[in-house]
Length: 198
Image (cartoon, rainbow, N blue to C red; front, side):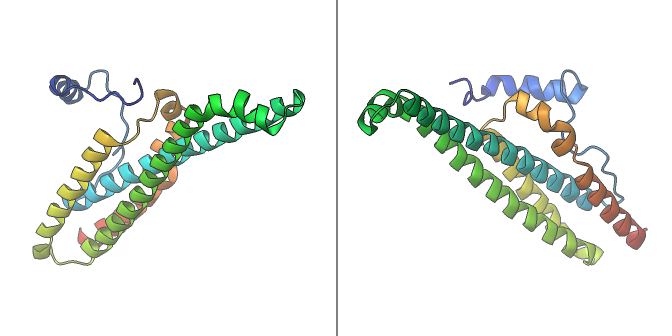
């Protein structure tokens, strides 16, 4: 219940107001992206968002996988220590754990799907960045529509995707949310783009 609680609609304007005035809201995405072309800057920022989210979800999914292995391993170890038969193991240990194991498997599946979807969207954004870099100025309006579509995806994902607990976010924030490789990649591509169009 706690993990899947959604933000009530009446709280959204309050959160937006806090973001507008910079109170109690941590920086997460889009840091350090500057570009002379607004559309290109938006695509860079959206790609950083999607990639950072993918890294976090991969790590969170890995934590669930390790937890599943730990539960199964400890259960078998206890059964061996207690010298249980297969029937006793199923009745006394495995059946009481089925709901927990089922929940973990569902989370692993959901997170894996979200990671895969983020990879697909990341590839589409990369393709659009390459196309935009080589496009003529008058042909760029269509990329604003694509930016809007990507932003819709990001919004819907945040609304419906499995929530990442704060402690997981904090563990990987420096390496994956503010990922140096992503920022360096974006910066170098931005430099190439600016040299071409300035």
